[in-house]
Length: 219
Image (cartoon, rainbow, N blue to C red; front, side, top):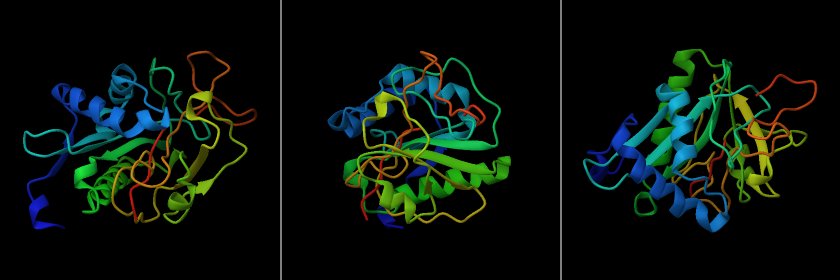
């Protein structure tokens, strides 16, 4: 770890953090037409505050954050709508992980991902999922996530998004940068956003139980 980053710490998100999170999210995803807005972001955090964290830079602008929430496997949040309620699921969906541009390349995304994965294991989650966007699928594949190309996604994720998942018990190694499932700093971004036939509800796959959004950090 860079000695200059010793003051950075990972902690649960507080109400005062959402302005900075929303600003960082917009800077990361607006260029990809994937920004979902503060209200939707906050709704994800309310569903599972125990799996949503901020990278605290000691009173300065938000250095990074990660949002994850339990979601049935093979389903994901729709970026066009907030969460109306939560799910009981053994799958933890990594919806978003972002590190500020000026702090990338220092292993901070890896710290956030390790923290989230340890939290998931301690809480008894069996799997973790995400939606790879912006061409970040190769990055996530290299870190244990496997694509499920038959899983339909909401239109809000764009045309090249891919649903991916992995066992939570398998060690995770990731590069630096931001994750909307490891894409914000890579050539592509990952995120779970799919069009739902239920309007504001999540997307489901016929014959599967009802079930993010994440970019990849730079190599």
